[in-house]
Image (cartoon, rainbow, N blue to C red; front, side, top):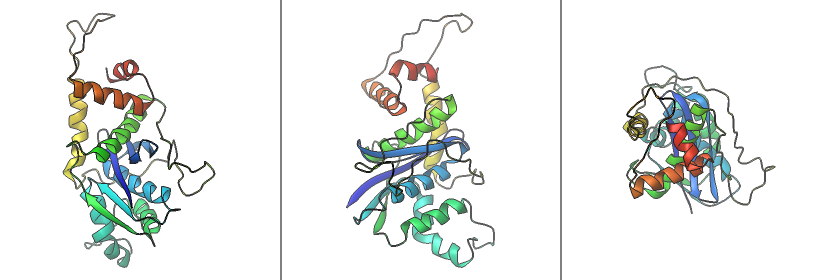
Length: 239
């Protein structure tokens, strides 16, 4: 069995957005858009995970903190398809293009979903979240997008897992996400801003001493590594 986490992140929701799936340090991938929603990132992460493992016969356990994604695949999708991809009220299903692609990707696959609570230290979920957010932040700052190694052992010519560094913009329709966990992105951005305090913001140059706990330092190093930049440069980007 393959155990993997999939997660999405959108700064501002909608805003610069990223997606990521993670198995281990040698098998993960990420990507994103300049403008998308958290739900779109969550769907894309699961979609790319299925595409990356399409050449394997193993059962896939997808750990996901988005109940929207899990319910879409396991509960709502059959009814949506019967109604021509419309909801019970007759309105079009949001994010239908991603959902259609996901419907094709899961056909014939052995899989199951496991809901995990986000942002509580779950190892795989945190790793996926870290990488998805790194992509969103890279788009926000105009930095190189950290796409990851993909599935270990595959070559760039393998068509099963295309990982695009720059993806076409998505139509943003789900600006009110159904799962509460997606709202935490804004809170975390505020936490980052609160790390810094300046005595004289009018000065041309400022000297700053930053004290971090061991946990905060570890998080900084991981996020800088995921973004592909030194920790000092990552900090300057946050400032």
